[in-house]
Length: 292
Image 1 (cartoon, rainbow, N blue to C red):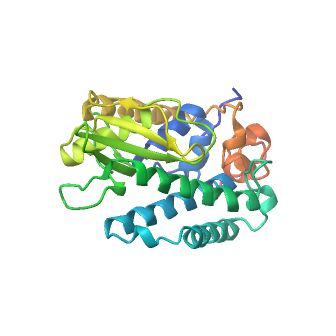
Image 2: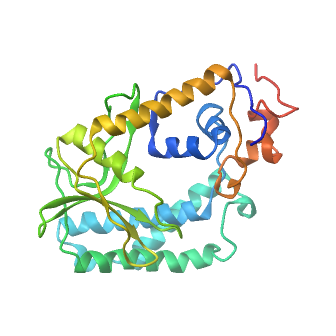
């Protein structure tokens, strides 16, 4: 840990939270401060560019499957369209691709090919799986489903978007699925528990299982049992995390944990790693000037 920082007077608290925000807080409080309060610019990452395009292309496929057009799905063309669009967005944010986050073994041209493979692996799995896209009580197909809402014990809204909710007609169960195009499978059930609680609060349903779809392997990963998850139990977890944020705000202490900075998209604004933008965004920087 490095020395704590002090919140600048202009930092304004956001009025909602999410799984990714809670995960950032748990990983590094300084990163949370820079990302959500100081509003530091986020560095594009090629893995995020590719992952977003994979999500969009598979969403396109599932929407076409609902109307019966999946048999004429031009997977290569669809993938290329979404990948190029995501690249363009990243270039708009940061034209210098040399400072993007990326794996040395997976440059743009590798992603151009492997992303198509990741999309095809999902399509192949969907064609052999008995699971069906669940339809919500208000008649929405559960594809990139907005389940944002309030949970007991948490004073702010929890934002959440579920990649897919499936109905298993064989075992009569609801299954939450999240697509994972990265190299690491989920470490815990926490993300799936969040979605299960939000779905229960919004629709009054019990989600039985949570599974990641591992695009690199072309199949689902570890299954998590969620039938005991309640809005109250998960709301309490998020309420505690929100109280931690309030404590950081009260004390002005935002410790930096520097063990996993490679994946951090605001490291350029962090004084703990001598980021070049730290004097603008990080009060722990010796050159920091209050912007007013």
